[in-house]
Length: 467
Figure 1: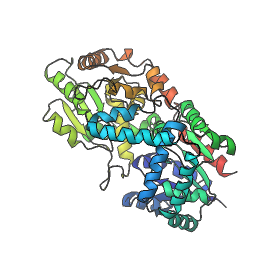
Figure 2: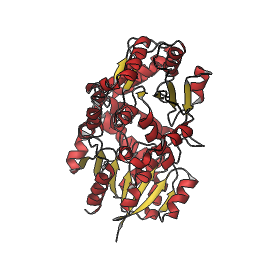
Figure 3: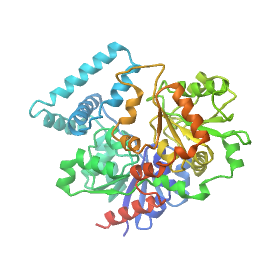
């Protein structure tokens, strides 16, 4: 009999990875997928059921105040004593610039106080014992145990082990001795998403850097249990090797609302408001330069809104522009991250990367996506609105997960407005100067560039489930 494998979906990007790559279809050749979705996405659920998949809508993790406070303390422990990254505080310090000074002082004191307490002998063990007690009494853990029993599963496969909504379900499945397999969704998750409370039987990651992070951070558990860490690339990049996902140019232009002419196209891929509330200034600087004739060749700009951001915050700052066209990404109705990522959305993204002439983004995975299409990557690294010299936006490019990209010289960083405009002009005229390291970016971050990463993950799943 085929083993029943719970496949969790708690985020729109999971749909792209699990469903659109065909991974679910391939999985059921040797297993019985039990799709566990954490929000009621009716069209996706109906689609999967029509294809014969078993689908369940699961309740989200529920955590009481005491449990949340304890997990927050564990997050301090994780960042200061387990992560062991020189760059661990870069994003935290950078984000402080958007808050009131009083709030910064209070939060810093709380942070240092809580971190210092873990220097007390035995304190870490006490906090972890407390977390385990509260897991039972201050969450919906017992209900999740019952749910795991009712699902009658043999294993769990998750690509979002850090997601709060899945947390308690994953803990319950582990407690019931289910085989636990994770394929980390993105190359930044291991060092940016906090502590993994579940010790997985198998970790699947993008690259050698991620593998080293798992072995460093979870060293005791991995070595004690002889857990496997596999480097298998990024299945969501497989689409970029599929010609069928490149729309005819006329269709793509109509889909994103661009005029059908010979003007070159600059793609600006926006970041989320949560991390970059000041980012619209860069788009405004480009718009002003176009109005003033400082950018040669009369190009236009296609702005792609981040899937968990709202395009209105950009439009409100840019105002009416004859140079910029706005496009939205997939986004959910009830919550931005709850969306059914369709093949049409993926084709639009692939075509956007393919037909645009140069790409601009701030410390984003989109720099890797764009490198897959051999396009110049320009990265704003200045801040006129919040010019904090001690914790500048430039520091974000030197976070542990992003350093390999910087080291390849695959992105051109602009340290001021004039440099940004100069780089745009040069990239439009001589793109060949900017793309010499695109292949190195891909090899460093996704390892494999043959479009067969989904197949690699499937082989690992088949092997692990056969044990």
